[in-house]
Image (cartoon, rainbow, N blue to C red; front, side):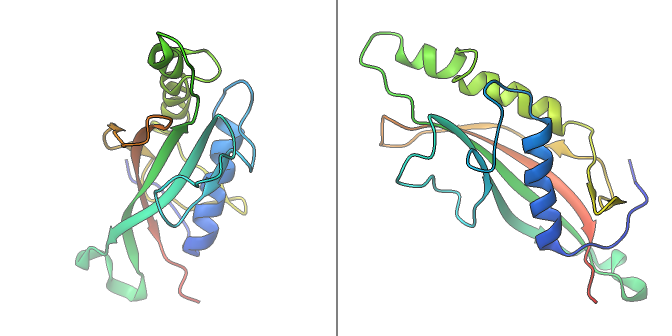
Amino acid sequence: MPLRSVPVKQADLLTAFVNYLIANVAVTPPLTEMTCFLSLHPFPPKIAVSDIFVMVCPQDGQFPSEQLDGGMCHEDTTVLIKIVSRVLLDEVGADVFRLTHSSLGMIEMKSAVLKAVTNKAFQVGGNDVLRNLLFPIDTRIQQTEDETLGQIVLPVALSFDHDLS
C-alpha cells in the first residue's frame, strides 16, 4: 500500500526504526537500547549483552529505475531483525525453554516483533518516511556451531526516498 512520505537520511531512518522497535515490541522485560541495537554485521557480539536481545542489521537495497525521475532517489531495502538468545541450561528441555519461555523465549520475542512490524509504519521527526507499510519477508532459524547461541532472523522490507540534501 503506497504511503505519502518525505525523503529521509538513511541513518535517521535506521535509528528511528530501532527506537520504534524498542517502543513497540511488547515483551517483559522491555527492550532497551542495550537489548535492541543497530549493527553493521549480522553476527552477535562475542560478549553477551543480555540473555536475549535484538539486532537490527541493514542489508542490500535496490534503486528502481522508474523511481529515479525528478531528482528523487528511491530505495527498496531489507533490514534483518535478528533475535539472539544466549540462554544455556544444563538440563533436558533447554531448547524448549530457549524457544518458548514467556520472557526469554525466542518464539515469544518473534511474535512480539511480528506484531510490531506487520503492516505498520513509523515516523522520523514527526514525518512519514516509508513509501509502503512494513512487512516481514520470511523467517529463518539460524544454526551455528556455538550451542550456546540461538538465532531467529526476520528480514523486513523498507521502502523510502533518500534525502540527498
